Length: 490
Length: 75
Image (cartoon, rainbow over all chains, first blue to last red; front, side, top):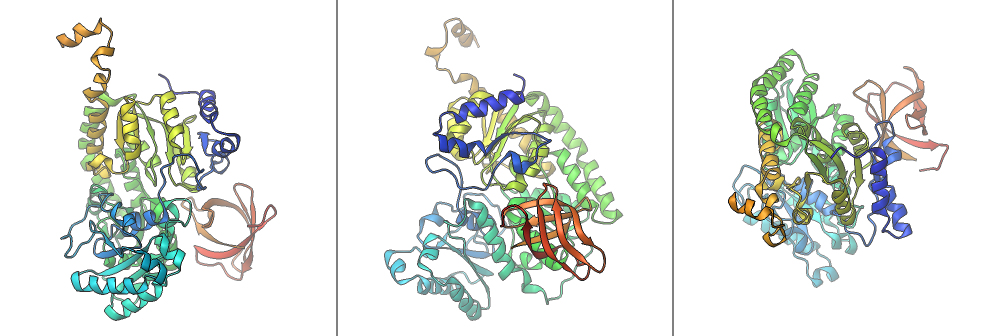
């Protein structure tokens, strides 16, 4: 089926909105749009607003943004989920931020540290418990390089002074102890949590080594906003190193406190996830004069573009290095595309993810001859949509903070060949008979970044789309009689 | 009054960023853009106008300044 025209897409949005009560309809209209290259993103779509009560959406909270995304992957720090036990326990190790280290000895990424608040702590305050917890951590896990206190909702509600406890602990142990005010009720989604976490890094970490010597080279860079999901940052890092750059820090997948402290010494910040880490990049630009550049390592076309863009910030050796890397992987990429493109050509994809992926993976799908016909963000802001409008084809669907109902209806009508979203959507669409990939966790596969990642990405898409199971979804008793002997013969 | 950040964007033009609203836009014109006087009223690509007190020298960009919206509702 050919892609929908502008009028058809508009009609589809109207049709889907029809079921809402008047007020909800008015609100949701602003979050759904037909992509228009000419239009101003600010006018065409509203984002970063509170979700409507009564609809199912897929957002997280500020705590999820800070502990789960920004701070959590820093492997040599211990991140205390300060408050009741559930927030930390049910988000533990869920994002597959890979790291090198011995868990429980010098790395703590997969562990859950919590102050396990009880009624008593709510009534009398939890500061004493927090101080005791930090003492215990120091005794049990002496190789930790620092501690962050990730506030859960009650901390803000009862007004605990975690800053004072942190300062005391810093003086006592001589280690970085960071209080993070990322109570879940702040903001409308995890996005504010990213911002709060960035601000905490700015206030408590960034300047720590300003006075210290650092043996720098002209080619120092930092990878910012790569969480190493399934090893993403590693497959990005090798490309940068191959072209002659020195990667000083990885934020924050497989990252360390020392790396973050050394980041102000780099020459260029490479920003992958703009949404979650632009704040700190802007800060470093203002305070240290470090330029930052957004890049995209999904699919060979975008990798090539990004490597050249990064190289423009350096001298000829790096520019040559970029060309060398591109040439080196050219044959491998051609082989991947030659193998999978015929199997995937012309397939349509609908995406609904968060962060950077709704726009970044478009290039990778296009390299495989696939078309992204709808995309949307859980928690984007206006600047994300401005960047997305350019990437998406004209007259495609854009949906911000889509509700479960809307997403299902869109998929029913647009009939994509593949849906890319999260675990909560996965089984709904699979039961509807539509191939599905989790694009948050790469469906426990990955990495998807870089050249090596693209080979895995292409294989995974093929494996899902061309899986024979989609043809066997109709039970035998519902098949018509003509088809039955054929099936038996085959 | 709101804190805004002005930086030089990749295409060489000045870029306006309002963190509170995540509003990022190109600056089309700036009232004073000389070595002795820099600032004043600025117009964004989307047409909205902002004002900040002019500085006496050309600052090193990016720079955070307090600006207020001219015309339209006050933020």
